Length: 220
Image (cartoon, rainbow, N blue to C red):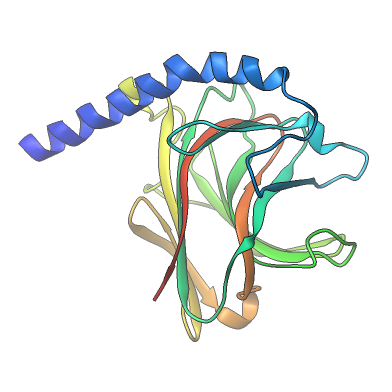
């Protein structure tokens, strides 16, 4: 019980810290030179007509803070994985208003700056569902459609923290790929159903305000 209380207190403290520094950091982001993102990172929007400069993406310890206009992928090209590995991220969702937009991890990225871009992605949204999709060029295919799972912290279930914290992970094995939220497996698919080897990064849909503390890639 004492450990549980300590964890909740730590969660509130982290959330309060992020809330206190998010607004001034975002204000400063508006004054940055266009397309000045964290070192090594690239931002690519879904629609070529929507510039990456419509996304605010800044270093904010611990991690990064971002607000999207258009949907986009955000990645460092040197951050890739192949074979058997695990990629994990911790996110804090700030007030999304009435929007039920999704955010999460993409993996298996290839040709990400060209017309033949391809990757798979695992996302959650404020109402407590997850989704798995695959992109190839301009085509999108659903691998696992929106599915509710109690492991996902919803916006309404954020409690006193004032922000919904979720830890998401993709675990790529020799034959299957498993998906986790807050330590619980929410689904799995055959490795052949997704893009497994390639660049990993973040995918964030329209008009969201997030803090991401880490994006870890670990061998299995």
